[in-house]
Length: 115
Image 1 (cartoon, rainbow, N blue to C red):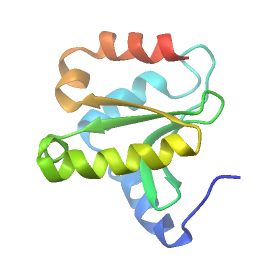
Image 2 (tube, rainbow, N blue to C red):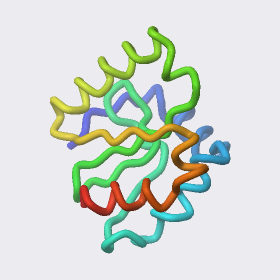
Image 3 (cartoon, rainbow, N blue to C red):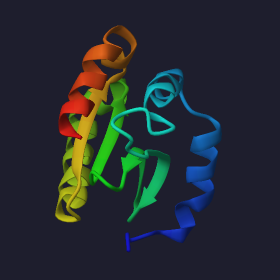
């Protein structure tokens, strides 16, 4: 069973309803078992974090990163988060918003290779 912070449930629900354009673009390509038959979930609560996309069968988390992730503070927070998720046995793949927008095929190829 995944660690779960019930206090994040309303935030996760709100994020699912209000996805960014980049998240919506990637979601349209990975939902409904479109990649090798793997099921993905969006805005999943794991521990004290809400991850963008989660595939339980592959122990995979996909994050789409906007500009705030590239500041020194943002990179440090992501490092701590990725370390925590790694200890739970997950692989975290991070893609910049620009990658998803300009190179969706390359993003999907990298996810495909991991699966």
